[in-house]
Amino acid sequence: MIRLGSVKLLRRHDVALLAALLLASLVLSAFPSEWRQGLGDGVVRICFAPLELPAFQLRSLRSSWRENESLRDQLAAARLTAIRLTEARLENDRLRSLLSLRERGAWTVVTAQVSGREPALLTPDLRIDRGSDDGLRPGMIVFAPDGVVGAVTAVQGGSATVRTVFDPQSRVSAIDLRSRVLGVFRTAGGTHCILDRVPLRSDVRVGDTIVSSGYGQLFPFGLPLGTVSGVTTRKSSLTCLIDVSPALDINRLTHLFVITGGDHGRPASLEPAAVPGVPPVPPRRRRAEPPAALRISVPATRVELPETLQMLPERGE
Amino acid sequence: MRRGILAIFAAWLSVFLQSALGGAITVAGMAPDLLCILVMLAALRIGPLAAMRIGFLGGFLADCYHPATMGLCAACYTVAGFAGGAVRDRLYPEKLAGQVAAAAALALAVVPVIASLRSGGGYLSILLRHGIGSAVYTAAAAVLLLPLYNRLLFPRPSGRER
Image (tube, rainbow over all chains, first blue to last red; front, side):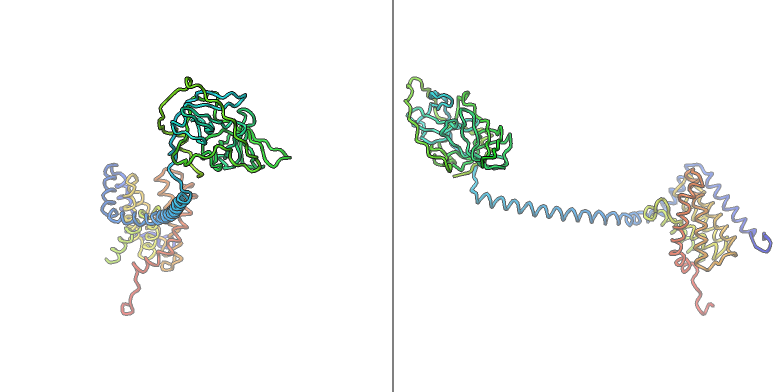
């Protein structure tokens, strides 16, 4: 017994055991690293490994619970989205059935070539090489890949006269394809066209595409008319003046299409679209038929509409 | 005999919990030293011989997770058991407060030594960064575990035995 005054500090066998255990620890630390590694791995494998997996699973319970909560939230959100999408699909189906929307671009058209131009200063009427022999009748709509050309006004056996949209008497009910603002497309002199009767503060912007609205029951919906090139508002007026750059270059027009049937329905009258406040215009005088020698006879063929026109929804009727 | 087996089991359980639950119970790099609690309890209630044996066994098991420093924990916990047994007469071995304070003091002494020798870092910085916090954490764990260890290792004798 080692004493410090009256306090017992150490006993000999305690010191002996301490020395022995410290020596054992020293021996352990003096082992080669491979031995230490093997000893450690073996003891861990025997003493702890059997319970490591349950312990790991116990530890992962918390993260699994959090992940489960997160997945439940995502599932609830996905269910809500699915419900909304289903409702939207059903609503879409209902609206489609209400609007009687049908397959688009199912018109029957006859191709024609421009065979002559009636003399006029700025906007000549066109003569085409198709007539009543090809099924054309007055009032049928004529268009080109670039946009609306006009309507047939008179037919003969193998030719017809087309009044273009650049004629001062022509009016086309038009719509802004982006903002659905309605107006009346007409010429303001030559190929300078405007969208008339557009209320002030309407959402019409430069660059908007103007197409026929189908409301006039003459031109079907969706035929391109032009692009907005300027918007002018005047304080003294209740409407704004929309300048439209026409989509059609009539001077370079050679081939065009005449809608003779299909979903477009019966051909409407050639009279300009009924616009409130605009007096009816008397029909123009028929011009003489051109010599037969100048006519070019091309057999009528059914053609597929250009893709751009097929994409446009049909409305009206 | 029974107490010896239970003490070995307690040592194994302490090391296992410390390794298995290490990530879950570590807060800011500080974890309670469960083996310190057991070694100090053995030193106070039984004596330095039992404490050194438990310390060596538990330290060896802990060393098996770090074979590169094999023998370090065994030596440290052996010395800790011896030191606890040397001062047991100056404490109140059966008082919970004394056991908790002794366990915290032991953790404060042992944890920085082991950590600095394992990592090669400075003892003082490790003591300040982790040692004090681990000692406090060990004291908190001791408050929970010591009643369990006391009941397991030192059951009160029945009236007839008294």
